Image 1: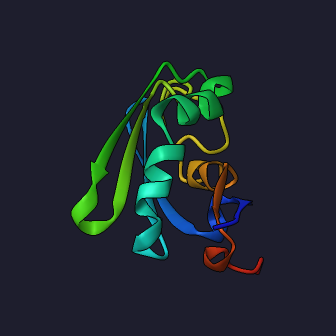
Image 2 (image 1 turned 120 degrees about the vertical axis):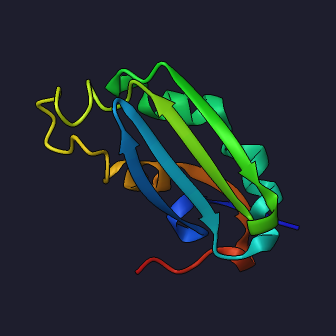
Length: 115
């Protein structure tokens, strides 16, 4: 089976939230069959590296296989949190868009056409 490289947004969606100086990102594949492939590729280390420029110090991934989803908790990513940051997005709501730009390799039949 041939794999192609695509941004995560071609095969999954995400939501973001925050609590203090922690970001909380969910990741859910559009097709549950992709869950194992995303589990292999969207690791704590890759997500931490993606947000290291924002000061992130740790990323913990919680696997939710019964609903084919992941939850990432990223420490120190909000530059002090909503009350302590001069960042325009102190709540971290747009962090999910950065996560969805991460690339993964999936079977071509699973990739959605860009919108």
